[in-house]
Image (cartoon, rainbow, N blue to C red; front, side, top):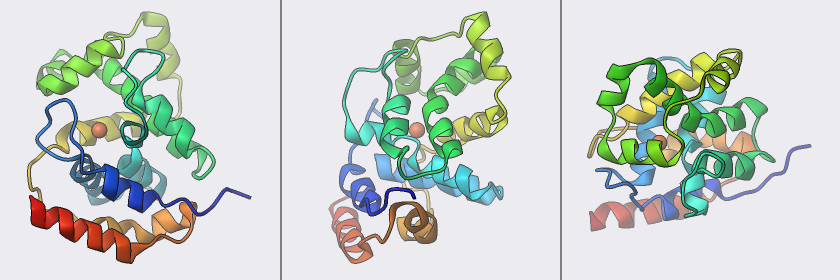
Length: 194
Ligand SMILES: [Fe+2]
């Protein structure tokens, strides 16, 4: 029986007003854009949920990024009691996916924002050959690489995307009933202040 009743929507809205690494969008905008990109290509629910929650680690800790302690690991640890194993794997490995893509694709590395490049260095930069081979044996690698590219693209200021409530069924199936009235009120306040 999974744990239930975590106000994840409230966390996304309240803590999601933050920005990091000098990015042009808030954490919530970024999450919504990433999830919208997943939905737009018909990704499975687990992948959409991972896209929406992939940076939740940033919302619960401000620990300095390193190869062994980064926001993907913290986010996966936080979500594990609530979500399917695939979701936690994708959240944890979206950091390594950037390291992988930078290792195998020079053009990809050139496409990253300055903030993303800085965090890539703190997270360990290029993968060593053994870690790379180990990652290439993982069955969910294609999903995490796709998610990584949505993640990188999900930084458009004021991009029109569905609101958080569009993921109501998905979130409530894992985290229990959410307080959408509060979420809407806080969202409206935030929108009015921008
Ligand atoms: Fe992200």
